[in-house]
Amino acid sequence: MSQIDYRTLGLLGLILVLGAFFGFAAGRTVGSDVLSSAADIDSRSAIEVTPKQMVTLGASMRSDLEAMQAIQSALAAGDRDAVAKAASRRGGEAVKPDPALQARLGSGWRSKEAALRDSFDQIAADAQSGQSTETILAETAQLTNGCISCHQAYHLVMPKPL
Image 1: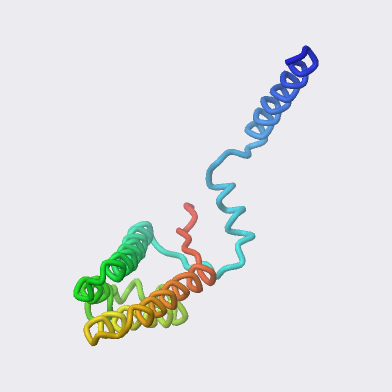
Image 2: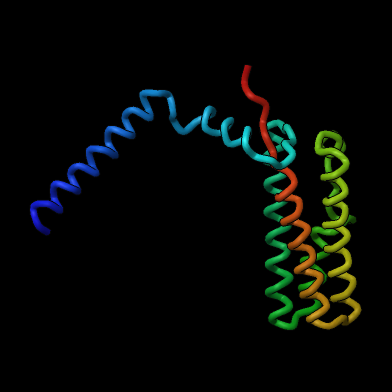
């Protein structure tokens, strides 16, 4: 590098350090003020939940994703019994939501969740009845679309500390 390049790099470094310093000095730290700013501009419907409910919902959604992955892997392997088993674990009969949490989530969320559980039940039934792989893949894609639409409509927030 030429000497001009080193000066330019030094100047850019100085600008970055000063920018970081003044940003922190002005109170712009990664923390609640940044998160509340993000929440202020998020156009999705906010649903206020407790920390325990946040963990419960996150675990449930991860279980849904794991089941979806297991369905796809089992379809690829041609294992209809594994497809049905994976789907049944997340269907309406298997997942019993907490009534207090459901009341907090609201009717729109509950409607989307019921459709999700029905989709898992349909996939399980179709795997057991010998429906085509294409049919079950299409249902899995529709199930994924349901997840996407819910995440586009809602976001979870915890109450701000007093």
